[in-house]
Length: 323
Image 1 (cartoon, rainbow, N blue to C red):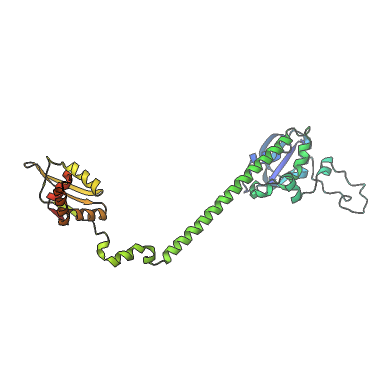
Image 2: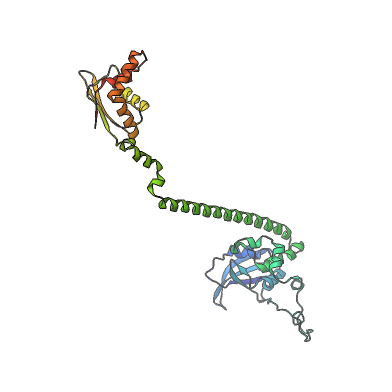
C-alpha cells in the first residue's frame, strides 16, 4: 500500500510544551488548506506526533522543505513525510567547482525562496520585532509570505491573510507599547511615593506638624481638651422643648453628638440630659457657651432688645455639670 503524499507528520521536540493541535493547524494553515489533523503515536520514534493531511501534495512537500526545524511558541518543530525529504543546497549553489550535473534539481518553489534574514523579515512584517517572542512570526514562515501572497491561484486568499496579519500585528504592537508606557508611569509614581515616604520618616515631628510648636508656645489651652460629658441639674420642661428638639439644636449649633441619654420625670414632665460631643473642639465651644461670662453677654443682649432664641435661653437657665 503506497503512502499518501498529502500527509506529513509534525513532531514537537519539547514534549512538555504548550503547543496544541489548534496551534499546529493555524501554523500550517498558511501554507494550504488542511483537510484533517489528528494526534497519533509514532512507533518508530516512540513519540506522539500530529498527522496532518493537506489538500495537495505540493503543500506537504513545501511544509517539509520550509517549515521543518522552524519554531512555534519557542519550540522546534520537525516535519517529516514518507514521500518527501528536505533537500539541501546543491554543490553548484554552494559555489563548488565540482561537476554538479549529477546533482538533483531543486523544485521551483525552493529556487524562489530568499535567504532568511532579519532584514527580510523587517521588510515583510515591520512590526514583528516589536512583539513579545511568543507572538512573533517564525522567521522561515515570514520569509515565505510574499511568495504565497503572489500565488493567488495556488493559494487563494493568501493576500487577504497577509493584510490581516499586518493589521493584527499593528494593533498588538500599539497595545504592548501602551502597556509599556503605563508600566513606566506606575514605576515613576511608585518612585515618587517612596521618596515622599522616606522624606517624611526623616523629618522631625516639628517639621511635619508646624502648628504643634505654635500651640505649645501658647500653652496647653491652645490644644483641644479631651471629650467631656455634659449634664444639666435643673431640668428642662418638655412643654418648652422636647428632648429631640434639644438634641437637634445642639447638633446644629455646636456639632454632632457622640452619645446622649435622657431621663424624664413623668410627674413634673421635666427631663435631664447627659451627652458627649463627637469632636473635642465642639466640647470646648459648648464649655465657652455655658461659661458665666456667656450668661452675662446674654443678659446684655436681652437689655438691648436683641432677639434671643428659646434654646439659648434654656442653655443659660440650666446649671451644667462637666465631667
